[in-house]
Length: 336
Image 1 (cartoon, rainbow, N blue to C red):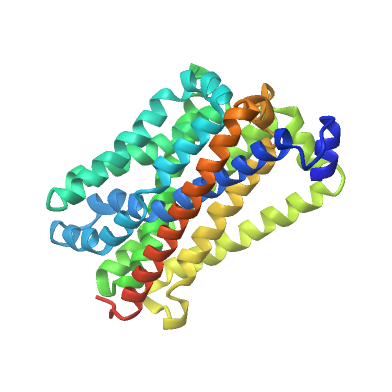
Image 2 (image 1 turned 45 degrees about the horizontal axis):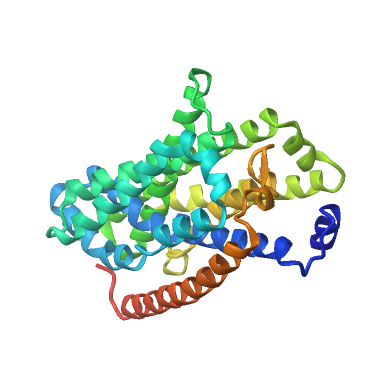
C-alpha cells in the first residue's frame, strides 16, 4: 500500500517529502489514541461525580488522581506536534474547530487546577464536561467539514452526548475494578446505559461519514473491503453485547471478569477510532488537503520531525514509566 501510494504521487517511499509527513501523522494518531483511551478514564470520572453521593465523590477523585497526573502530557504533545507538522491543515481547520478545541484545552486546565486545589469536586466535574463536549464537537465538526450549520445541530448533539457517554463508560468500567458493594453496582448500571448511548453515537458517526462522502462509502463497500466492514461491525456488535451483559449482571460477577469491561470499552473505542482514520486517510481536511499537502515544507519539517521524535521518545517513555509505577501500586492495593 505504501509503495503504491508513493508511486501515485510520483515519489519514492524513501523520499523525505513522502515519509516524514506519514511518520508525523502516525505519531499524532498514536498520541490521539492515547489521549482518548487513557486520559478518557480520568475525564470520565469527572462526568460520573454528579451521579454518586457527596461522601463518595472525594473517594472517586482519590482513586483517579494518579491517572490524572499520568495523563496530562497527551494533549499538549499531540497539539504541539500536529500544529508544527501540519500548519496548512490547521490554518484551514481552525475557524471551524476553534471553539471545540478551546473547550478541550480549558477542560484539561480546569481538571489540572482542580486537583491542585484540594481536589475541588465541582471544578473537576466542569472541566470534564467541557473536555468531553469538546471532543464530541471536534469529531462532529471534522466529519462535516469543519462547518457549523443548523442542519448539523442534531448530529453535533448526538455525537457530543455519545462522547460524554463513552468517557463515562470508560471511567465506570475502570472504577468498578476498584470498588465493591452498592457503589460498584450503581456505576455498572450507569456504564450499561452509557454503552447504549455510545453505540448510538458510533452508528450516527458511521452513517454521516459514509452518506455525506461518496468516496468513503465506496472505500468501505468496494471489493473485499465490504467483507472487512462486515467483520468489523460484527466484532463491535459482539463486544457491545458482551459488555452490556457483564455490566447489567455486575452484582453476580466473578473475580476473573473484573477487568473485562474496561478492555471491551477500550476495544470498542479503538475500533471506532481506527475506522475513522481509515475512512479519511490520506486526507487531513476531507476532500481538500492530504497529509502531504498540509505538511510544512521539507526543511522546517525535518526540524519538526527531529524535535517530535525526541519529544515522543521522552514523553512516551515517561508515560510508560508512570503507568508501570501506577499499575504496580494498584496491584498491591486491595479493592476498597
